[in-house]
Every structure is written in structure tokens, then in C-alpha cells.
Length: 524
Image (tube, rainbow, N blue to C red; front, side):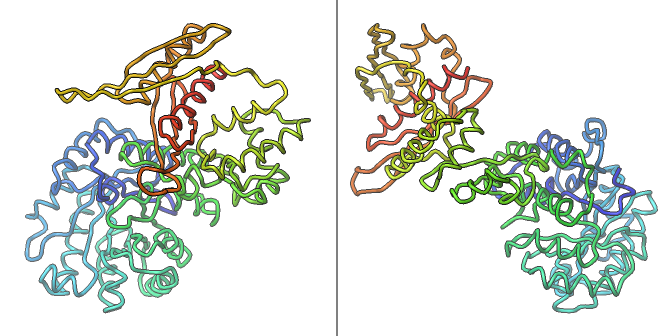
């Protein structure tokens, strides 16, 4: 457990992260997020503010029986007693005890301006509020951490009061004093200087909490670690108010792989990407493909020069083995691709190009022509695999020969909108005509084509569109433009992406649909 750890990783997703615009965790969501965070081995999970928010009060009540943590300690968050109120009489302090967590994290004012203008009290009373609350909680068997809010801004205005708050907290029994860059305005060199100075003036464990308003939250946190803090706070995927917080996943990965600090159990590190994406789903936010370490593009290589070196040794262009954090290396095939990119991508997709040097050259040339016309295979591995296989000497024949297709959209007086599609195809010498309806022309086309082919390829009965994305390319004014369509298709077990490009959106969709069903037949 984290109670004896020499270094604390303290996650605040369930409070700070939930303050991000667009996030609203239910109690069930909060319990699920806590379980996921425990799986990456964080030492502490701050669950919320009992007494202040009914949802958080319910979370702690349910956590007592429903949350079984293997690595983490659950923490309740709250404020010091109010000015002029006895600690025993403050209901917010009592709510922290009622949460029954082993650890309580208190927020305290450490900026003289906030003490005088927000709390409207004296500096002496502020220190007493800190000392009284910490001592009261410790007397009731709680471990106490203290978040010194606006510490860095306060330090710039008065370098003594924040230090006095830390001393008062430690003297009353607090285990950690956390220096908070609440406004997120610091840079790494400033954080390092302040932490080093504070470190020389107080006895007790120091922590760091950074917002990302300068884009430096992770860097600021690491600078603080270098200067001596041994408690780091972050949120999953950097979720948080305004620009967000330090990203827990980047913090853990950097601390372990770059600074040599084993802050989580070794078996937990490969869970980073999985947990990152799972929490994104619970937050109903698309995962950031370009997120360090855990993003889908974090180890994706596009330039032909990179691919040539990677073919010799992946370490030449990867800063670490992506599997260490549960990720994987990908090769992107674009107009920048060279022979090495195509060979590596073929290997990744299971297409053996050995002994087919002429095929590789033809594919490179074909990709460059298609990309110039607007095609993109970066996110459409299924289409690229079909292109590769079609270039091989033993290429399989197409599923069908198209005679024609047509679509129509009918808007009735009642307001109902119905799309219909008819496809005429030749399969093994037989002419097949199929008509189907759908909620749009693309859906109708998909239904009609699958209906025409399903008797010969029964697996298509389980195939359906999962997502459909359209991008307009090369706008020419009016309604004239090239359209790129990406179609995500699933059979309930796996999912694959195909691409189509044309000036007509239905024709672009047709190309992507044909690839999607062809891929399903050849792989499922």
C-alpha cells in the first residue's frame, strides 16, 4: 500500500478532473474511475468533497462497501474550519470525518491577498484555522495532507506567509504540505527555484500540484520533483478546469522511465494506455491521439526517412519501447512514404511483401498519386491492406462487378424522410438486383449491397456501420468540392476503417463501403 511509500502519486481526477467543462461523473462513474486508477498503481485517489456536494457524500458512503482497492488509499477533500468557528462546530470538518477515509486532504489559503480579501480574516487566524483543523483530524486518527492554494502567486507577493502555513500544518501533525500552482501561471525554472527555497526553510514532506495554463503542468511537476518534492498530484489525461491539470499518465511514465523513480508497481506501467482510454470513455471524451505515451499517435511514424531507420532499429526513432506503457508503434502510409514505410506497414498488417520488390515500388507510387487526389490511409488500415493485397501477383478477385447503383431520398408531407438504394451487381456470373431502405443514402446503400452479397458471404449478416466521418477537401466554391469519407465498420467482435474519395459524397461513401465489406469477407 502507499502508506509507507517514499514517493506519493496522488490522483485528483474525481474532484479536479471533474471540473473540466463537459465532464459530469455519476457516482457509478466515479467508482469505476477509482477502480481504473487503482489498476495503474497510484498511491492515493482523492474522491471528492463530502458535505459540500451530495454526489460526493454518496460516493464515499458507497465506496466503503463497493470499492476494494489493491494499491491506492482513498482520500476525502475539504477545507479548514471557517474563520471564527470552533473546529468541533464546523459541519464541513465533521463531514470529512464522516467520510471515514484514512487520509484527508485539506485546502488552505497561503496567499496573503486571498486571506484578507477572500476569507476576510487575519493572517494569524488563517494559521490557527490550519493548525486547529489538522490537529482535530489527526486526533481522530486521520492522516492529513494540506494543499496550500495559490502558493506560488502568494510566494511572489509575500514569501513568508505560505511558509508559515506549511510550518503550522506540520507542527499540528500534517504529513504533506502541497505547493499549488492554482492559477497555472508558472514555468519550470520558477517552480524549481521556489521549491528549493521552501525546501531549505521547512521540515516536512513537500508536494506539488500544477494546473496547465502555460502548457507546463507536467514539466513544472517534474521540476518540483528535481527540487525535492516527493508527492505529485495529477489527473487522468490532464482533465481539469480551464486548460486542465498535470496528466497523471505522463507524470507516472516520466517519473518511472526518465527519472528512474519506481513510483508505481512495475506490473502496473503497461496498463497506462488501456486505463487512459477507459477513463476517456467514462468521461465521454474522445481519447487524445497525440497525448504523450498513451495516445494512438504517440509512437506513429509518417516520414519515409523515419521508417527507413526504424526498419533497421526501432530504437532510433522511439524514445522508449512503447510496450512499456501498453502502447504500440505504428507506421503511417502517406504521400511521404518510401519503400521502408510500405514494407513495415505490410509487416504490421500481416502482408508478406518478401520477394515482391516491384510490388513495393508500385504501391509507393500508387499511394502518392492517390494522396494527391485527397485519399488518406493514415486512419484507414483496412483500405491500405486491400490496396497492398491487390498489388500482389496472387491478388484475390473482387467480390463482385458493379453494373450500377442509385439512391433516392423522399421527404413526405408528414415530415418523414426515407432513403432508398438499388444496386445491380454481377457475382460469379449471376446478375443480382437488390433494393433496401435506410435512414440516409449511405445506410441504404450499405443495406442494399450487403443484401446482394450475404447469400454467398453469410458473415456479412453480422456486419454494420459503427461510425461515418466526412471531410470536405479543396473547396472550390458553391457546392463543388472533393469529399473524403471514413467508414468505421464492426462485426461485434472487431472494428476496421476504410476510406473513399470523390467529388460526389455518395460515390466517396460507396468506395469506403465496398472496401469495408471486402475486408469483412477476407478477414472474418
